[in-house]
Length: 231
Ligand code: DC
Image (cartoon, rainbow, N blue to C red):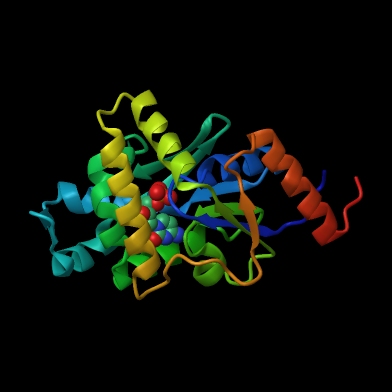
């Protein structure tokens, strides 16, 4: 299927399967995959390692001053997309529970959002991009040609996140995952700058009971109908 040079925005709450779906779209249509959540996680890791978070308090002044010195970029290969801090691959470190615990307050800071948005625009210059996040369709790329808003039941989301952490060898409990997801949902959807919400022109997909194959079939149908492709 030949898909036009469009930007596809995939938004939704944590653990609704956004990145898995977006990565699959990238593979299926030879698009570039950009993970905006990874960028916020990268900033969080940076703040943690530079000692800017102490006893749950973020030193915003220090972070704002140091942010221009942070060099984050993605490296893409057939095996996947990885986030780098300079020459260091941080893809694994940014997925820990410690980073997850601080990423929502960090991503609520307006100067952090402005910094990430600028980089996302820069990385998307060539087009044919699929990007996942919370505010891609509403704020980062409000003119994206195709917007998808993923949802899944709370039970399914907790199970996905728990299984993901355990499979990566991380120590956590079911209760801890429930707590982290509900806290992040709350902060992400109540912050004053670019809160998580569905764009008016986004197509909603509840994938609680769907396989990835079914999600792609749904997307193909959507693209065919939307762009008049009959292949
Ligand atoms: O998708 P994720 O769980 O890796 O995202 C990590 C955090 O980053 C999430 O709690 C909210 C924030 N985020 C955001 O505010 N805006 C985005 N476009 C993407 C992520």
